[in-house]
Image 1 (spheres, rainbow, N blue to C red):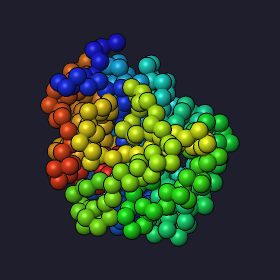
Image 2: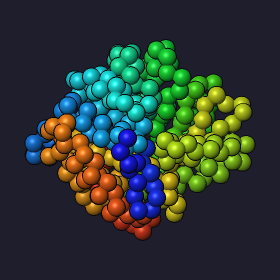
Image 3: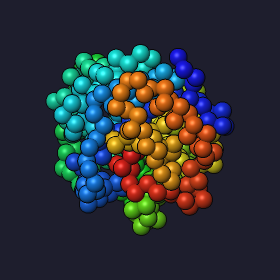
Length: 328
């Protein structure tokens, strides 16, 4: 194995978030409220061989977890082949995806057979009408059936992402807790994050997860110990609940201290941070297997420029236009 990817703050990177498309078929208020619009540039997303090469380079430098993201990654016709290729990479032990759940019911069995080990589904409300209002799609029951199907095909846990929106779902904690009482679901409340195209929504709808944390702690929920390959959630468990609750609060001052993940966009750019100022081109080094060392050297060199923080708490959202653009 080559040298572990590490930045100048001694943070090691075990976790790659790999976007395979920026296309999405939902119109979520906090991401693509007007629906997906092609940028006008070439929509040439990473090919399967390019994906194999970039994942191979990361695995060779200590990465053990890959999360396949989008847009909506299952819109790729070769999605199962992508999962299989990632899962077959030496050193990769966890293959996760984040999905809107639109195709789960029909396709999750084939994804699991291909090697998918973990799944995150976005469900911003347990009220079908509110779900429709937030996502722009009347697909609540299809998504919920997909979650049921995930358990049927053998997933031991499903993570469910909920973006907190002050006027829409921030007071739905009791309903969500009732839902996970007897289900092995890790419910993840994610604070709304400021991006370039979403300033008015952020100003009107951002709410801190601290109030949820305080409520959980008052009700006897306990903080789980974080593992090296985990994402940024603070995860709480309760002896009376089969499910768990995770809180992702990027505006806390120490949020970036435990950063362990890097991002590669669907068009082959390395992003050192979700809210970085630019991406670093990798695609010119993804044409041949013989370029792996040059690819590793470029990534390791750029890691030395990674900032200590995303600076969101200073009101600086960087240049990310919306979360679908580099996979959230």
